[in-house]
Length: 166
Image (cartoon, rainbow, N blue to C red; front, side, top):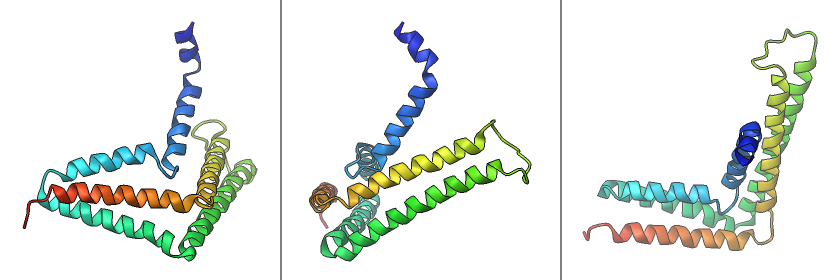
């Protein structure tokens, strides 16, 4: 019975899994991105040049995070960027819906109702961007940034410890 449900509803399950991955990627402390950072750090351990390059990348990332703590302007600009991205994705979705229903343009759908599907994708992006914007504009964002900076500093220290003494 359970396997039958999985087989019948495989598209819905796949869509839910993809949406969960997308939502996690846009989260502040994303576990998928932390796995990616871990893999990049392990990859960098193969040579001294890669370790130094990875340390420079982490320092640039840390400095960009620190700019959010130093100035409110950077925080407001990132919130504004999310608002603009939300508006653009909503406008794109509405435009796709309108153009797909105009009788002036011949329809060449890849899939029947593909205009609706593309518009739905744009609206889903708008929802995800809106959630990310809410997280960035949250009052506890400063403490999350501080924790992220501490994590980056810990990664830099681990990689620096693996460098041979000069």
